[in-house]
Length: 364
Picture 1 (spheres, rainbow, N blue to C red):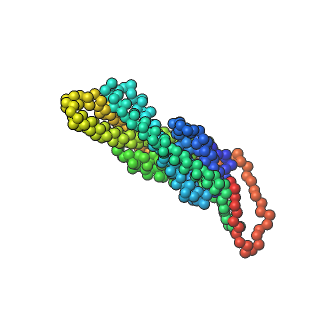
Picture 2: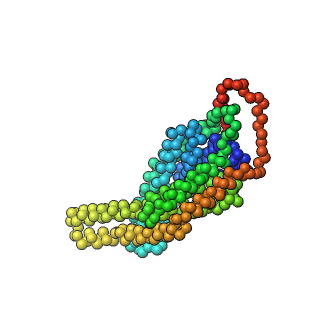
Picture 3: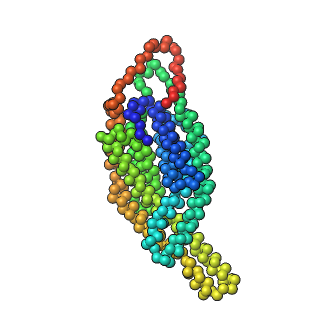
């Protein structure tokens, strides 16, 4: 989503809720497009919308605490977790089908076996996981839609300091998120650092989601190109991480295939089939060649992602921090929303001495 420039000058408590409500509305719209068949593209869009919302609520937690209950956060987390397996299966299937033409006839036996296994897993994930995740989102949405529309603030007439603005709070958050990304990138060393790769990817994603709503107002500071680069980093590290996840799945599938083959072979011999015939029949339906070929191709894909990450991103945390600093500094300038005229809100009379501070309910 994009925000209007005027919102940058609003109190952070209000602006953070306005953006959160817009992100909630985006998630609700994508949820409405899912239908009953859980269309893969619609599911992908829904998951991204929920991730953006969760990331925003996490970043602005100090100002949204009273409007976002622990139960709502848990339900959104449940939505992300339950819809993830179906999405992972879809990504793996897409990659597998891209490899089919390069496989031999014997290798395609293993290919077909693995595809069938993953499709079955996706069907179960759709039936149980996605349905449960959508129900969790619906419950979270109802409570958030009510709670985010109102908040309580304290006004102290003796305090000359103005409320913290959205732009100044966002500048601090951008610096904090950039520092986290720099630290996590600095810990990535080699191809097998999967957990660190995933952590760096998550840091890049959260920084990007903070930047996206204000990018068009920060063009001179390079925000738009920074968003694009963070997206590229996210894709590269995501590809790298997916390779590790899928490689683990293929190892487990190979173990299962070997166990099934041994069981069939033993059963055939016990039932009286000549061992040589049983071995020959088992060889004709052997999936090992196909699984090994796919594992090799997967390794090559991972090495390409690693080389790209090493060339473009590993060791470049300080450069990204400097680029984020340029955006944060621009946000802190008073003319960041130069197209919005100054407004004054006169107070007609001061409260009598000793009058208590008032608590106000403010609707975004």
